[in-house]
Image (tube, one colour):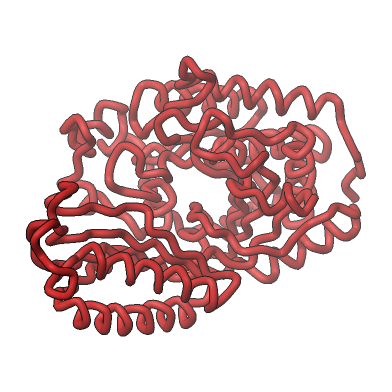
Length: 415
């Protein structure tokens, strides 16, 4: 049976050292981290992680897109792999914990298990996924998507970053995409376990140590264009106007009001608004706004959108304007593994660790793996919910609690 250590000073110090060490690759002047895919900062971080994996006795290897794995070999000589980890790429001037914590947790957990209990029965691997954020190229989940076969080299051929550098060229400059490493496609995974900072404030506000995620929400994103007629602001009577902005404001008010009434788990955001001609004394002839809406139940999400857009049409007709709806993202909700969650919940109850069953409103690599393999996503608290920012922070006590739970889950599954 695994040891029941409530707190380890050695583990505490190891976590603090490793967080700061990994954050040094791409560290910014204001203590943030900038580490986009295939940059020097990203490459140096992956290579340093490879060396650390070797140092703690793992078999470290890359695949051909740049995912890095550290393997703890099982004694049963079976092909199946229990995989844990996350991503190390960041947004520009991001934080130390998003993604990186899951990689650090996997490293520390495997080192602890190896030193305390030797080889597991089943193979365990920690993965440092090459990309999740989409912060350099218009492509998210390149790392996990390549592993499950959802992404391929055909998907990246025409992609460029903001400086005009092609995706394929950046990959080759970093040493990948040339067939020197194994194919990223995997068929040997038994499950995936991701430990992540919450990037929200729920756990902190409710005083819970662990978030046990049941679903990652589905997302729909739209660009709404309302076209009316530009005219003079002083000489056009209100009753004769075809004001695109007036119609758009009614739509936005109705949208957000209905979102509050539909479900407490539904979120809806209008984050961008553009007006044409955008002049103070001219009636807007065109209004363009974004919609980002999310819910863990796809039927609720679809029904909400259908009902809202019917009412948008009524508003459009009343204002004698035209409406165009561009639905450019449709991500289905992804359910996490009930079996893995039961294993984790049993451990949490035995250890008397406070936890909350919750959904994830943000996307994670778990939603990619979860479409193909049993997957578990666990959260630790984020201070004030800050993320994608140098202000991102989780206490070492909370980081340690998450790693202790990960150790016990991996022990239960592999030993």
